[in-house]
Length: 79
Length: 448
Image (cartoon, rainbow over all chains, first blue to last red; front, side, top):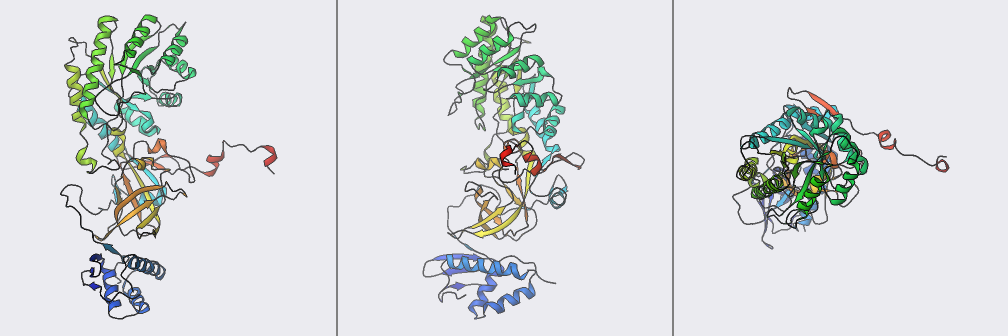
């Protein structure tokens, strides 16, 4: 997963694409994931951390991770 | 201890016109129905599951009687069987004092088996067979005549009977609503109804006791009922004057809406549907001012269905899967579809989760489990981030769903009634494959 360089994110989950003017709202976990991605953490490390701290099965997290990628792709936020 | 998990999601923000109307955003969880936990109901009776509240059935009936009975001296409700003919529902209304309004031979038999005396059964419907008319005559049900062929058929059936069958004439009329329903009964404005009334009285074979009209369904204009009542009252007075026949009752039919929101409506029905008091005011006002003599007011009969039963029914279902559509929209597949929730073709049903979620919602398309493209329950609904296994409650599903449901692809589920003491009663067991196949026969050459 690699966000486009110009995408602005905030801790509260607000996302802004200055190229298109589109804005988005991420829920807390999605905001946390995007912040880590921007920090350069890789997917495996982020997922391991989520599994350690959240009440979720690995299979469910994988499905939801793929769904998040699909949303980011649909919203044209990925490189 | 680990933190509660909610799947990561992103929602595009769209600017739109502000609207100060409408319900609170977000879905409030409904964890119990009449005090019984949804979780317990699903554990005992499975999912999907129809749940009927006896308390609400009685409350709705009593509210309707109060609305009309405080404005008009003689009111009789006749429970519309087709709206929900599960015996437990019918018997609850009959206990409250309702007669039966039936529209087929099958419904007539059901009403009789539910203990309704024949004279308290009003037999409507446009498709009565000779055998239906013979049965109705035998038990003394009141036959609401729909068309000239039926009138002549009944005259034939009535010939030679010791007791004249009691009849009412179904009348269609212009009550000021569009489209005008003219498929049921004889038209008033073109003189057809008067001609039929004359023939009934002149025959000497039938006892004319009532006039009936049914101006539509989910009628939102209370004034239309006032107009219809005034026209029926005028017709009754003309019967008295010119045919020397006293009309004992005027039946204004049904068609009163519930507070389900119709598809395409801008505002929720809870904000726009008139109360039953407004309908009662319009009807009672018209009848009381029509010119009946002292002590000669006809009984007002109403065939309310949806308005009495819709609020009392709920449908519990379970999320089977989530998926994302080609355009990025979220879709959720539930374990019930249009096979059970027929009214989702008409309504944007209110649907609640059954546990607490965060305030995060996502516009979601709701599908049923049928492998059919038409199986869509909501085109777009803001729901929390439901996961497979989560349950939901669809509200106000008591009308039509438990009579128009289809055995299609899936079997029909359990139906329970919650009594006023909080006890749960199974009132229709879930169908089985054996039940489904018991009427089938396989030709000998296909048995091997």
